[in-house]
Length: 330
Image (cartoon, rainbow, N blue to C red):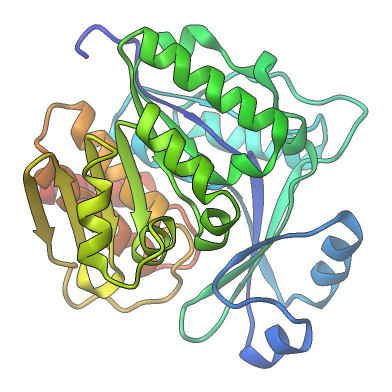
């Protein structure tokens, strides 16, 4: 992995997040499934945006958050994702490049607008996401920069892309090309509802292509249709070389062949907003992994990154905070 141009190239939905506080009554009134990501159309996006409280706009998307975190840790990164040639598209492009990420996917012209995710954060720090995918739906195989894929140590993909047929094909193309080039393939399952929609396909993808799998407890239980975490753990080790499984306040478990590493959660963290916690964990893990750390050390940095994110409002930390955190863990 030492001669690669990029440590990680990520492929994901290029989304601008709009984050606002809300209460359970608002979620119930508009029938929003708490703690999940739900896809909506343009009309619903306008309706929900109109009832949101004061919000914070920030470039997001699951893989976008992860790749920005890796870049701010000091990793060499690239990102593939589709925005439109509009104001939100310009915001996304500026932000991800400013984080130090190589981003050159051509924008969509005269089509759907840039995607946005309306994120309602309740007092218990749960985030409920209503996402209009817009230009993301136009990501296709032609947008995959195969030079980036072939010259990376790891290609990281988000499960949310599986909802879109052309993006699904783009992911498969990237996974196949990565395998041919000796590049590690990593997948985040993204959401338990997403897993439920595509369980068999995800299992097939994991068995054939995925080297490093990221999932939280509800996602891995959904994937293997079990209520027993240890049962899911035993099953996933048969499919992937490495599985990094997050368990909220219980920390995480990293499986690597016969090795099982239980990593405690960071103590004393006041949870403000869980948006982007899994993305931050993947960022810390993949940065450490691509720098040659063992998987236990990678899990520790992942946990520290996640703890930093949930102690603040929004899915991305400042670079200075990330560098300070990195120095304290590695």
